[in-house]
Amino acid sequence: MGILHILVAGLLVAGAGHIVWRTMQEPPPPFIDPNPWWGPGERQKEDTTVRPFKIDVSKADLDDLKARLALPLRLTPALKDANFTYGFTDTTLDAVVKYWRTKYDWKKREERLNSYPHFKTQIEGLDIHFLRAAAKAGPGVTVVPLLMVHGWPGSVVEFYNILPLLTTPQEGSGVAFEVICPSIPGYAFSQASAKQGLGDLQTAQIFLKLMKRLGYEKFFVQGGDWGSLIVTDMATLYPENVLGIHINMALISTTGRMLKAILGSVLPAGLVVDAKDQHKVYPMWEKTSMFLRETGYLHIQSTKPDTIGAAVNQLPVSLAVYILEKFSTWTHKENPHLPDGGLLQPDFPIPLDQILDNICVYWFTGSITSSMRFYAEYFGKVLTRTIDNIPVRVPTGIGAFPQELGVDPKNFLAHKFYDIVTYRDHPAGGHFAAMERPHLLASDIHTFVKAVRQRQIH
Image (cartoon, rainbow, N blue to C red; front, top):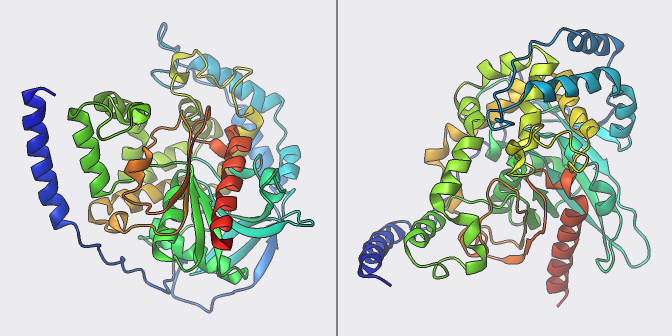
């Protein structure tokens, strides 16, 4: 180690020690109003019934979609050899819209979406939507309740590929899951808040109330994207109800994690981060550049969600461009260098019909703007958040997918998750793991829950 490394490391360690000393006290849990009213107007008597719900788009809405899709496209020729590095290309948009107009059949897709029973129930003044996938139990099989939470720009549509693999016992697991998949408030079929302030913490409380209303006092939780944050909040705040947490977007922002990342950037490889995990964090500038490139949407949605929401909510083509670009770049980091962003390639991991299902759900419910407000509620308070430094002490499973926007090493995650039972590096897959690699994610969840249950037995 050179003398410069030693001096820099010494200064960083001294500074880090001071910061750690000042933050050693675990912060108190944040206050969450236990009984707010997010619906319009004044508080009313809450309807606690659980009502069946069926996705049934009217002919008028379908005709309106077809009319808007039939409008001539105003295409801007792409720059030579730019591919998707500047964003969506004209030729790809033309191909997608032609497919949407001529081959995509919503009513047929609607049958798939209704293959699981859907419900709504009022919680804190909002109609909360969820689907319920029943476990296929048999001899020697234990039925385990599992709450799965989606993210943005996803919906419960994300889970249709994985649900059959969760509700059915996998080899050696001895478990079948009773899966509850709610829509985040303001997303798809869940009513949007009429008031400011409904973010991840408030959603965690709503989903806890949902599970209790369905008769589940103790259950496992799983999520990616916003879902990973919401279920992490649940595990942090309600450990007496959460049997275990599994996430597939493994990023944290604790003080300890930040200090480790800085130290690892100046110390020799392998001292702070295992050599096999160096690529997950470093080179730091390269990772930061990629993050900045891919998160322009985040800044817009965190500051003026109603402006961009109003724009993309006018035309289905505009909505599709905005969402499809995320499915391109978030499934593989090299996709921006392909002429079609990978979307039209035969080996793209998610069929176009399934992505259009998700887009149509946003379109028919008119929920894109309210879904974007979730960013403003979170990032508007991010500097005052204390919950990130409150540890999760319930058993934790991590699914690390190589094409995810970011994945933290296990020893970074240990600053938030104090009982990591499984941490699996998967050979393929990105942000939409449940859609892209359902077998890998399902196997990971089964393995994690089996390990937790075996510990409890012994």
